[in-house]
Image (cartoon, rainbow, N blue to C red):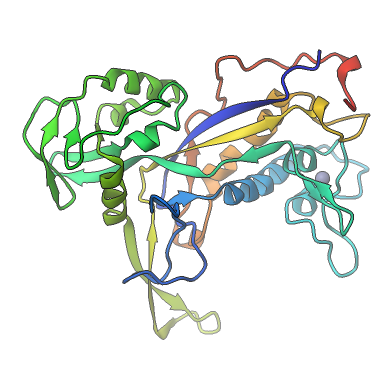
Length: 336
Ligand SMILES: [Zn+2]
């Protein structure tokens, strides 16, 4: 038996700084540097390709740091970290070796001769809980479409528009930013908070949570993004460039995002017979988690030099029901 062909690990993370994953140009209204949005809901998201890119770099850093002096000619970092293009003299680029944890998990390019897609794939990270200022302090707002991303809440029904559902002590109307909404109790709230607890969402967030309709969620998020104004710095003089005032938007500090890492079973993939760096989906997942401390220290997206982008993964170990331990016998390794 070589086990299941893949396992899915859901991940929740909280923005320690404002997070700006830019679209690379398009101006929207008053904002010069916009962030990536879901094309249908217009709710901002972090593309899975961005997550895969930074985690690849961070895992390569971690692997290189943890490595003994070795006879291997190529370092994991930076060679296996980037997009795999060799330098002009032919050095660098992905090593593509079956015993390389970076290249097997994140894939590798092999100039012109195809390559390997990697054993881990990353969904986009969607906003699960969004902090909004109210007159009672911050409230984390979510919506049925966001909650449906969680296993066990897939059949979440939409709620009435223009109401705020929460189980607080007061039934008085409450403002989300500039928007005043009538408050209604929500009978299934404990099912939701239990799921959030399983994802290691902190108690202070679970206790200050509200639900709005999918349509209103998009409005509330987009009206309460962090928008900052900054000046471009001339690298030659170190001074502000004249006339180069620009604005950019970001997910605010405290936003909770959710994504899934799908880890394929190496035993079902053709990645070489001997000395395979990872033996099962749990191994693949464990390699990815090595990048999480770097994600919290160095962040994701742009404006890193302005103190933006750090993400703390709340459930780094991500034990999910049914996830098996790695106990692949020698005989089941290699090609299927
Ligand atoms: Zn490599």
